[in-house]
Image (cartoon, rainbow over all chains, first blue to last red; front, side, top):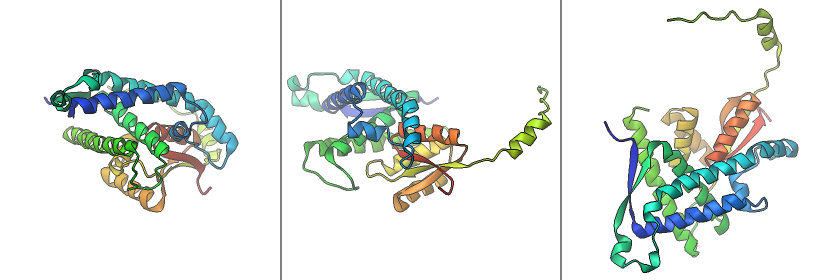
Length: 166
Length: 98
């Protein structure tokens, strides 16, 4: 019987950076400033043409939706505990050493939604409005890297489904 | 083992048929961030669509700017829209033909 999990190989320094990004995201979800456009992107209007319906929908869904983002980011953060190191004191060899990141099947969606939400936030901060947009901002590198990791994770999740005949 | 099936009240059936069924729809809009493979996966795993149908819907979102991904009662469509928002997709609800 094959294990119902995905194992990703991550350099210690990659995992440590990711852990920090996820923690920043958790803070954003705890603050959930109404006027923050990134937070608004995560809670978009369901009725752009109908203000009253939009408000009713937002009133009944927004907080719970952001609670779920926070809870799922916490699952991701916990999984990244083995990568919780002080990167400044790492030797280059240690920083690049690969470690296994194990994602249980029931936590895959939490990972996919969290990485997606973080990419949406970074895209908003960078002002990304078209595909294949390039930027000199250092965060652009993080954005691309997250996209690559997410793509790998989606492929692994799809493969897992296929093996189960779903 | 079978369970006896309750006989539906005839009155109820008449009421249901008489009630105007206003269909609503969920529209997913294109955005420059979400990965194509991700959008296909969301349509496939959440709605239970085949890979072919999910891929066709993803391509419609990409090329036409939006696609109708579900149709039905308003309450159900709002549940779907909320789920799409959970996945980071930009979804709206509207009356069919609206």
